[in-house]
Each structure stands twice: as C-alpha cells, then as structure tokens.
Image (cartoon, rainbow, N blue to C red; front, side, top):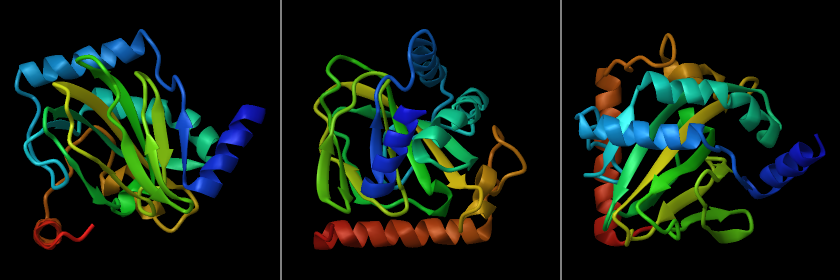
Length: 218
C-alpha cells in the first residue's frame, strides 16, 4: 500500500507516473504474439488521426478483457475508483510519428504499455505536464499512466521496424466524465456504433489537425 500511495501521489502532482513491469510474462508475450497474429490474418485496420497508416486493433474482446482485468492495478496507481472506457493496440512502423495532442473525454485516465518490438525500445514518448516537457522511455512491460485529457503528448519519428503499444482508457467513477463508461457502449468488447455526430466530430478534428500541421502549430 505504501508503494501505491507513492505512485498515486506522483500521479496527482505530475499528471503522469511510470509503472515498471506493469505487465509481465507469460501474459506480456501472449498479448504481443496475439497482436502479431491478428495483424497477420487481417484483423487490424489502418485508421486514426494521430498516426495515419499504422495498423491498429480495436473493439477486441481479449484486449478489452485486459482493460477490465488490469483496472484494479490502475486504480491503485491513480488513487481513484475507475470505470473502464475502451482499449486498443497500435503497431507502429518505421517512420511513424505520433502528433502532439490531448485525448478526448473517454480518455480521462490513460495508460500505454509497451508489449513488444523488433529490438530496442529506445523510442521515447513526450509529455507536456505541470513541470514542463518530460521525455520517457519504456522497457517491455512498462507502462505510462497519464491524464490523457489534460497532458499533451507525442512521439517523434520512429527509427525501428515495429513497436506494439497497448492503450487503455478509464474515467473516474465519481468524476466529470463518468458517462463515458465503456465509451458509451452497452458493454466492453463490442463495436461502437458510428453516428452522424461522431462522423462530424471526426471530420472536424481531422481538418483541425491538418491545418495545425500545415501552419506548424504544436
């Protein structure tokens, strides 16, 4: 409990905290190889605003089982009772860049876990928190817990061949965004219906992101 208190204190003050060995073998290697297999058999897509063209796996029952099973560990580190929101996995490829951004309401408490890579994990993620910009490198199984809607975060160009990151998102049970439990789905592991409102929001964000990149706005 002492370690959990220390982690939650750091999280509350800095808006992020590193969780060493958050996911360990055999589950770590199972998750990594599962993603490689799902990509190989064509179950991934290549959508998304921040990293267009890279493979991702969404609405997957196994990945969202991890989301829920790992929630108690995340709650201890965050110092809050949480609802699971959603999870997905991205397979970053050579040359990928994660653009600077903050997350949407469903990502109040965010966590990214390095599942595996082709070699070195020396590909930092940057966060602009209360104490300025931090450069963070995660080893296999390490996780970064951060306030997704408050802290701007990004990655510069990836020089490796591939790196797989598990992204999991939660909302505080008694917080402003509690309505985003299950990302406003009936349950975890099912596809979120596409509505006219969500299509419009996606297009607005896409245009804004393209304008920001064109004008050099970070």
